[in-house]
Amino acid sequence: MLIWGNAKYRCSFILNFHYLFKVKTTLFAAHVSGAVLTFGMGSLYMFVQTLLSYQMQPKIHGKQVFWIRLLLVIWCGVSAFSMLTCSSILYSGNFGTDLVQKLHWNPEDKGYVLHMITTTAEWSMSFSFFGFFLTYIRDFQKISLRVEANLHGLTLYDTAPCPINNERTRLLSRDF
Image (cartoon, rainbow, N blue to C red; front, side):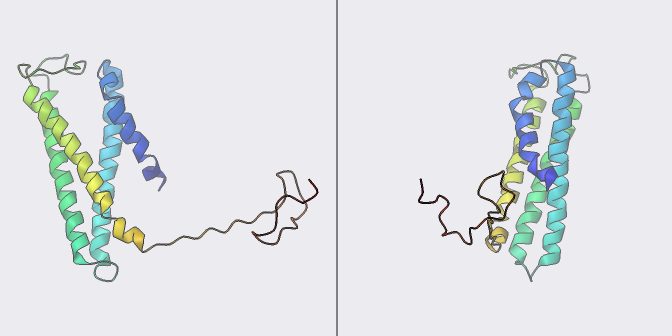
């Protein structure tokens, strides 16, 4: 849960600072590391949850949820494969050495098509994640949580037990 609690920050880190990382090669490594953590761990999570969905049918949810999740995992896998393949070819050195520092691409640039395929695959992979998380709507509708608040003192500095018995007891006395 802690890994996924920080996933939104990793994804924001990758997406918001993508262009800043391309300015310097050392920061580009941070971008790639964040992308591997986000997309790699996310893909693994989707795969494991899909296997669990298969095990939970039909007692917890129907076959439709499993098949939808399986299609989204396949979509994610195809996007990841095309992204990794095209970016590996692009950065292999055949298209120049300054690609890491390149901020703006023009259609006449060498490697433009590979760059566009890589970028599209990265966004496609993000949308497969969003679609996968939308499949949890029905699962979370079956869960209800209740919170009970207990006041153990009138202030933060009280060590004596609080005379308040329930929520309807007034917090402030009438002596004010």
